[in-house]
Length: 102
Image 1: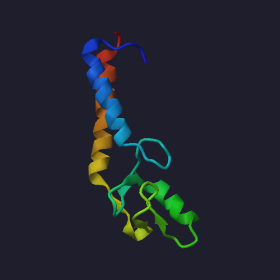
Image 2 (image 1 turned 120 degrees about the vertical axis):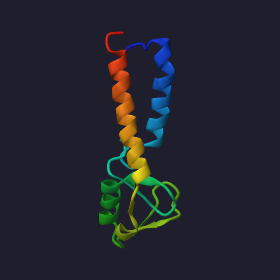
Image 3 (image 1 turned 135 degrees about the vertical axis):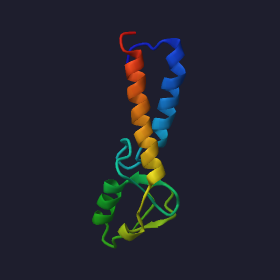
């Protein structure tokens, strides 16, 4: 990424901080179709399904805190995290448009 104009560095730094919040700690990518589990951690639904499919008991512990039991039935869509991901992409695109040609 090219050097940003000083007025945009704060926005870029904030976007980097938000990105850390919306990373799936299983695939290490930005959350896709996020699901939240009982302990409050969020992961990509597909990542959780993949973990559960590999488990003989069809139950796993939270990959981060090892506290919550996770089953396919216990997964809940994480609407707030999905909105955060969507807004992150919009802000990132707006920053790219605003800094084009600088």
